[in-house]
Length: 312
Length: 105
Image 1 (cartoon, helix red, strand yellow):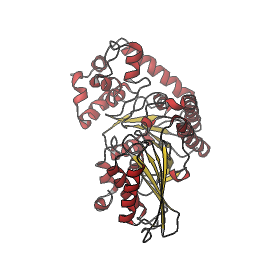
Image 2: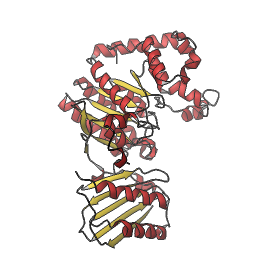
Image 3: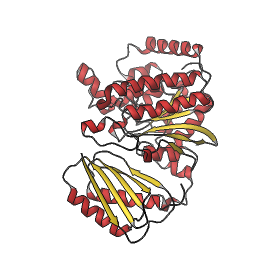
Image 4: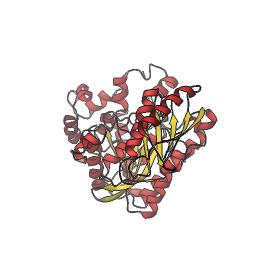
């Protein structure tokens, strides 16, 4: 794959590579400065899941997450990228411990930001208790890192979206960038349908799924701070932009976030569909939002405004 | 799950200086190949863990053909297989050899 591409620059290659389609390793390679990525606990160390063997399921040498350090425009960053194709990018014991360890290292060093490339359906059911504990440990590690002054940025545009415990962790981050195929939620479409019935949520209605959980809606609601087009270069630029935007974190920002969410609920709590929310936000022809190309959507979203820098 | 192991004597060592490389993902119809430069020049080993039980003969043929074609001396291949077809296996093995044949870490 790399040989005929030698003549084009890394930025051109990152621009022409879909974030959604790329593997976790390709995303990191193209997101960071060329050749700067150094992996921690790489596949050759074979830190595989201790649980999958019991279920007669295949393991992956990196347990579905790649962690390490690299550079972004010359500055050091810690990175973690989930591989959404291995068991839906789900959190198991080892998978989670790698991310917890990275966040704790970031807290100790206190100056180097962390980028988390989410691509996950949530907890790996075969490792349920260990996976749930991992989510709790990661959420704590994110908050402790942020309290120590670390910026923790989530990038969401993978095929598995960011669901279950992944959605909870994303909610703890300093800021999020999302693309159209990226979805952010806790309960997924099929979970809602199974528990509440098809009248509540039809998981086969893809348009409904995307306008309820998709990147555009999350950006307009203020859950995600930046909307990226579906290529790795756009996510790189989004990460750089967010690194410059994120303010300090403390009790005041948590109170401001609580206020923002309460205000959002009082404004849009009665809406039955995302289109009602977009209309209430003052968007003319709200029903056309899903069809808008990325550049037009970004222009629209910028008019709506951005989550206050003091919140989150 | 089924574990398979193949060891071959080969004509020549693999090129390049990288110590290890990884390609692919463990998913349905896909596999990952971890290749490491850890064996004597005239040897090659392939360790397979596969979710598809009972395909030992097919693996024997695919690995035999691969070793004959690429002469990957000095390399140990470790495969986690999610039930990939033989052509996908051949492709990933070829990608792994090409990746480790690059210079660098």
